[in-house]
Length: 262
Image (tube, rainbow, N blue to C red; front, side, top):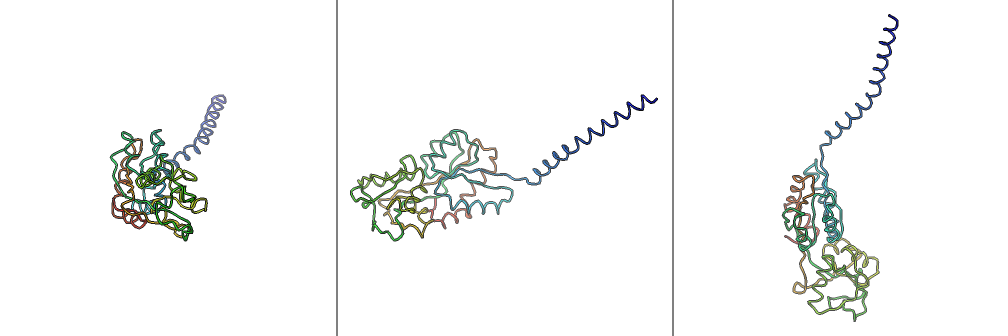
């Protein structure tokens, strides 16, 4: 009788210890599930051209207010850098480039692109335009100005080369940057006298740079296509965001930032 009682007691103690060990784990798992269910949120990662940095920060806030269960996070870089990430199947949900050429080169990696905005080129100079730059001709290497351009692989660099070649102007840049913000920064810091950027980028630094307009007949128009990515784990939400970029709220933000209608 005492042996039976001893075995029973040992089993009871073992069972109690098992419950004690498992209880915290069960509680932790329960809290994790409840937390996930309570959040019920989707985070979209969007790869976007560097020239969209400021306006898309506002777009993220505006979209979240309209869609509280969706948070949009951006990764900004030159369009050619973004394309390289997409080609490597980088985990993201949507892409916005500063030219159609880059987007078209990603056929099979994206959904159907839609143009959400347009842009144009200006010449950025130091505040007050101390070198008295009046147009593209002043950027010629014979004029001894320190000029910075984006690299030819970058959309704004390609646009810049196009407008300069059309005018028969040869420029020997002091540097070739990997995105348009790099060009703007060089001018802001006084490391260059002038650089070709998008009109919208010059608008982000009104107290640091002046914008010299390029006439329409000499200019190039940049188109910004947006598309979902095939690797996205949130296709429905990504499609909705890309569609939203073409709607009235996003278009107003883009117009206010200086972008042109699609």
